[in-house]
Image (tube, rainbow, N blue to C red; front, side, top):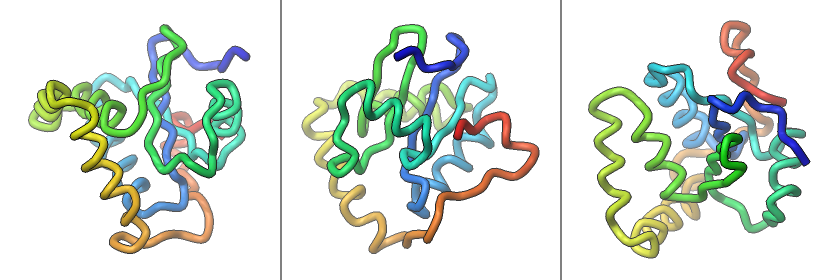
Length: 140
């Protein structure tokens, strides 16, 4: 399945009901100097199609995903988060240096936060609805 995204963009898939995830999306939007990122909740049609295409079990996914249409590849968990951070404005882009840490260590920290995110940050009843000036950045 071909996912219709411009080749020069990257798609961030996130848990649309998670307050931490929604705050992270807002953080990325404010610091996306090159207008590189598009967004879609994992619970959306686009999210479903990507999960299906890459055979990702939605019941086991508590991760941010970064889809690169030019390579048709997905990054998961800490690798996705750090690759996103590396494309943002200074000083956030410096977080990319943590990609040198072995993935098993990075993902242990990531998984600990992901497992506790609803308890620590809360959860919404429905996915966030982007404001009219941000609609172009979100895929449904």
